[in-house]
Amino acid sequence: MHMWDVVFGVLNAPFVEAHLASCPALRDVKRQREAAGLGFQLHARGGYTDDVRHRYVGPGSSRCGAKAWFIVTHGFNVMMAEAEKRQLAVHDLSLGTHTNLSLGIAYVEEDRVARIVAELDLLTAGLMTVEAYRSLMGKLIHLSFLANMSRSSTHGMFAPLAPNGALRHGPATLIAGDYLSPLLVRRAGEWRHRISTSAGAPLVAAVPQLTRWRPLVPARVRRFWRSDSCKEGTSTPGIAGVCNDVAWIRPLTPEEADLLPVPVTEFVGYYGNLRVFGDDAAAEPDVRVSSEIDALTPSFVLTTEAAQSELMHKVLEDVQADPAFRLLRKARPGASLR
Image (cartoon, rainbow, N blue to C red; front, side):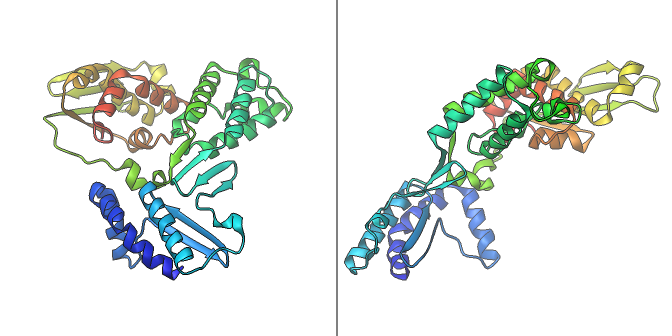
């Protein structure tokens, strides 16, 4: 392995430099690790006796690793004891997920995809028991990373497992009737489509800096949205928003003020700004929208989708469904809404 390290280091150096030059986030990771006294490399290797395992980032490094292995094993007459272990493109199997280390990808096996799709069809037909549904939810959560499904993709799907859901009648209860809500059917359809068409990811997707980091470049136009809500200490409770010299106000009835928690009304303030000002902002060719919300929870829900309240789920769903929101996020991913 030490001989392989030397040969591979020489062959792979140009690919490492190319990765670092093309990805600022990767350079940041390298600096952070070196500052902490840790090593930095875009591959991993290990093994015991004749069981050797290599992992690479990218096909280029994979080819270099295979070439280095060939040079070392054949050039120095060192070979694996068993012929089947001399293969260069083996893969692992872990909880139904294959990892092709030569290509640097992880994916769900076709048979497993077919089984999950069949279970989702069983669910939407109203023929799945609570016990089977609990198992299905575990599979979906396990596969959510590879299928690139966000946290909000499971909002509303845990209702049958709640204390007042179908589970209270026993594990053999069918999820049907009122327990099979339109939201649950829609979520199941979204999962079915995604898993059927995209159930794999490159290994680099596991590094947050490589998937979420985006350069915040200057914008030609800046828009500032501000919103606030008030329920107590005023004779006119309500929600309001403003952008430049244009404002809107939504009064709250006494019943609404009693029913809606403050984090929800603050989040609705952002949604109101989106509905009032979003279309104009999305129509501009180079715009950045900075939104000030007078509460931490809505900001956290908007950026991480980590909401538990059904009301917050509803507001988040309406925000994400708004065409202006999707246009702003698509035009300037990670930088449009702050």
